[in-house]
Amino acid sequence: MTPVLQLSGIHKRYQSLRPLRLRELTIAAGECVAVSGFDAGAAEVLVNLVTGASLPDEGEVRVLGQLTADISGGDDWLASLDRFGIVSPRGVLLEGATIEQNLALPLTLSIDPVPPEIAIRVAHLAQLVGIEAEGGHEWLPRVTGETPPHIQARVHLARAVALAPALLVLEHPGADLEAKERAAFADCIAAVAGAGTSATLVITKDDDFAKRAAPRALRLEPATGALTPIKKGWFR
Image (cartoon, rainbow, N blue to C red):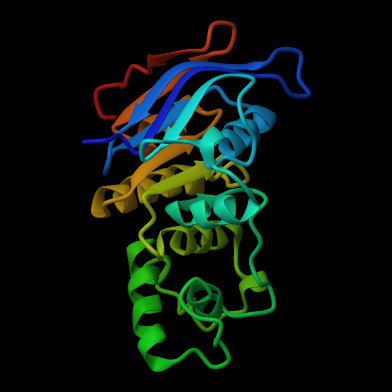
């Protein structure tokens, strides 16, 4: 079976003291992999390479067997984005809308009010990412901008998985959360990835987050581009 994502021999210069190097990474359908050792700049570069927003100076990126370098134009590239669900610090929520309305956006543009059939799907999404389980609150009718960061992080995740993408990409998820909420969010990512069929790539700077979020956790060696397994403790 063709892997969902393949990166090989990657070398990409950007505004940093050293280029991003990545020797080899392959993710199969349904597999969840976390890669640690990426600062904010390197993580953004990797996301852009994976989605084809930029091309490597050396090496190849393939998504579902297709070279990103072979995407011929802007329209084709925009169409190719349907393969991805992305959680990124650059993602935007409608802060004046309710959480229910934000979760409905991937499914419909008619969010005021949310149609009943869409509301059912939204409720399932909220349950999947643990929004309604958080402290017993009724979060769906709440205005998004008035909810805590750990709830907003789960909204981003729910929107990314709403359309069952081939590849879920998470760029520094949970970086702005407190330690307890960050650990809980890593567990949430692992549960969501395990319940779905999407391949999942978690990009982080934090070894502990990587180990909690994915069965396969790797650390980048920036000087060589090698990805080495992160040793897990007795319980993780």
